[in-house]
Image 1 (cartoon, rainbow, N blue to C red):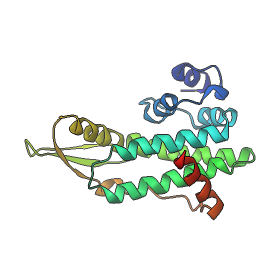
Image 2 (image 1 turned 135 degrees about the vertical axis):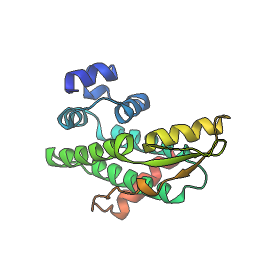
Image 3 (image 1 turned 90 degrees about the vertical axis):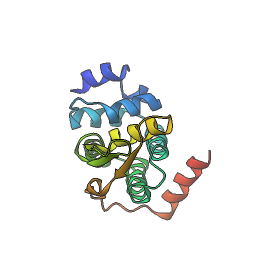
Image 4 (image 1 turned 180 degrees about the horizontal axis):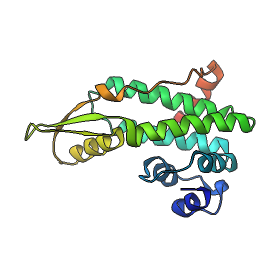
Length: 180
């Protein structure tokens, strides 16, 4: 999907309109291939503070969807969230936007395609392998009375965190945003 197709898919005119949670969810969870350059252009046109808030909100939503006993995957997702928000918050030039886009692109591919979670049906004893996105969807359905599973996240830990480190001021800014 190129930039123009991405705008149509997100139902926006340009990147400056990329400011709603639904658009972020659609971008991350889209099953179609999206060119990294298309995302980069979208992010370059978007407001970085808004983008940081969307990332925080999206990660909060997916983390809240995790099964209660999934501490390790929670920690990994929290680290990815901090990395992405730190990169976009501190982006001052095109190189920074490219770096953020690359990391976001990596996360999106891992989360919606490459990660592997084993779902073991408590009712039937069968197992199925799905991406993390689909495992979180199953956990949400379970909380609404759907089929019950045990979740094995062991194969989903194949995500390398960027070496980006956040300054103390960055962490305070993230916490302040979360407090609002």
